[in-house]
Image (spheres, rainbow, N blue to C red):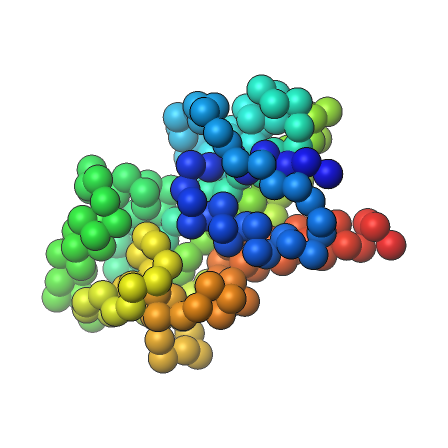
Amino acid sequence: MQVTVATGNAGKVREIGEALAELGWTLRPLGNLTLPEETGATYEENAALKACTVALMTRTYALADDSGIEVDALNGEPGVYSARFGGRDSDLERNLYLLERLRGQGNRRARFVSVVILAHPNGHVETYRGELPGTLLEGPRGSGGFGYDPLFVPDGQTRTLAEMTVAEKQAISHRGRALAALKAAHQQAAL
């Protein structure tokens, strides 16, 4: 099955490819297609908007993810605005902005949330959700991953997501959990 991955984020493409390798799908990059603006109020709405648009344009299956970090002390912010948090242009700037907003806060609890949508060429949509709870540090650690990974220590771990290998992160991450649910559903359907 050919699946177009509806993201321009190379890190997400790599993680998705590794997570779904066992399915034998041929994952195609987005290429020069333009994704619609993320105007949804939820992860589900944004992921469906991207996946359905790409499925319609390519007439293939399309897979999209929308994810973010929800910080308890910030009443769930930045949430669906994680990639645009504070109007900052880079991961480093967004991380620094988040740390500024958390200065003096005792509650460092947060969770990563990911919703993966697989849109079929016939209009059918499959939805999978994954969450990863943890704690935010007061400064970044690690050079792997992307986004808020250098600040986030998952529950039960001592290292940030940025200090883990891709395989270690994939095994526990919010996106990894959503993709594992998708993979399990398609492996079960193939039986």
